[in-house]
Length: 253
Image (tube, rainbow, N blue to C red; front, side):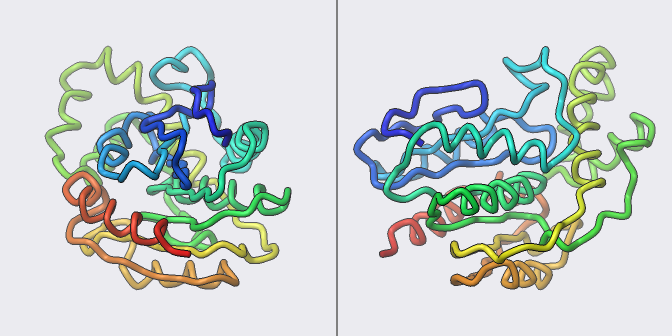
């Protein structure tokens, strides 16, 4: 990223700190827009600039077809990052689907010579994990049931049930993201050099906390696992603690 954190089609500035030593690039979970990280971004100190990826098919990119291949997403995002120049310390943070996209983006950035400080992966098993579900082929009702299973407040999904016209607008992007996750297959390669920090909720229905430790095998650098109370979207309730954890890593040498 450049010293100027101007918005682009793919990257959105949530906290601009032109003099900051650190830039944190956040990758949303499936179905989520870049603005899902706005609250977290405001919790960091003045030395950290925060940007987020805007996937096609949501918010101001609603008119674009969603991308259903994580490798393609990572290719496009890495290309965008590389065109924006360097910062002293760049870290990536991804939650759920975003963790896998962030990992694949990190692989491409390191391959092309970009050094990273830390890769934060949240609420997602290591890349060798294979999804066996095929919910992207399921009915809208089955898809909504899975969203309710994952949501911190299942009632928040109720609006999509009560407003079919809204569901018609947002479900295509969600379904595309489910397809991206369910069809992703890890391709072996050189381990990352950057440190990896894996974050997970103690009651996450998508993974066991100890599965987060499997991320250790994907880096030759340092590794740490942090657990937080809550389910898949523990971030919604523990933003301050997550920001403290990330901030401590970014403050390192």
